[in-house]
Amino acid sequence: MRPLGILLRHGDHEAAHYALVLATAAAAIGRDVTLFATNAGCRLLLHAPALLADPREAVLAARGVATLAQLLDAAAELPVRRIACEAGLRAEALDAAALAPGVAVAGVVTFLNAVGDGQIVSL
Image (cartoon, rainbow, N blue to C red; front, top):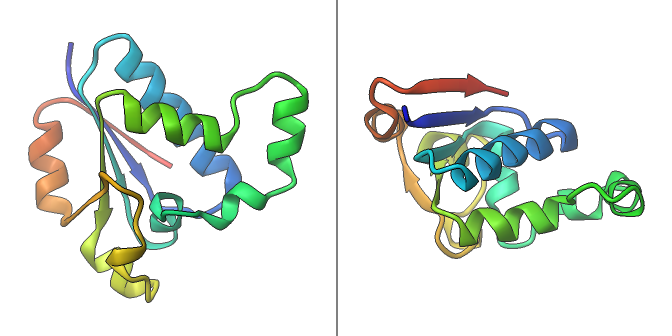
């Protein structure tokens, strides 16, 4: 199967949630997955993302839909390569030391090399 690259540019709950849904589902069926977050999207990859406090998390849980917290745990356990864009971190004034364990810091060239001739989805 071709690798899947997910480019997360937005920091809103909906984009973050769906990026993780795509990443974990693709990894679960054996695809190589790289989740590359830049600009506001980098906030998802922080050790304690503020998005976990979004009221939609409780709604999703009550409806039996995977929450961001569950999907973040799954992404860390599955072979989902998580990269925070170095320039995106600087643009958002975020410290790389605040990233979750296992999240790499790299640039877009690393992302493109990881995906190769695979598919890229942008959110």
